[in-house]
Image 1 (tube, helix red, strand yellow):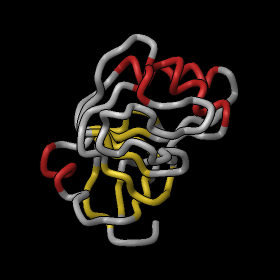
Image 2 (cartoon, rainbow, N blue to C red):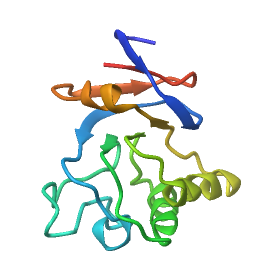
Image 3 (cartoon, rainbow, N blue to C red):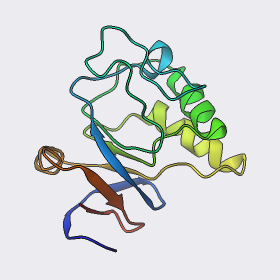
Length: 139
């Protein structure tokens, strides 16, 4: 893997992914907060409103629960607008269910890692992230 391996996360969804790093500054609801057809953040109250999550190494400090987040993630994956990787401060089993269903439907979901507090804090100031199948995260 290119770059310096800084941290290792807990693998939630296996795979490799790499992309520009987008660290959200607030939790988000995928249902009503992200447009599955474009990958844009559409919640006007969210600090990153208007940004695209497609192709990004997306760092989530948390999610705002909805059982529909799985369907939004599945639609993002199927439409080609999913993040390149998910870096989670907290596990969201419902969101990850969308990735599991996508894999069952022969789509390739983004890898997902859970990072501890220190690992998530280390994302600050980074611009690009690469996730390896073993849970290694490099910048």
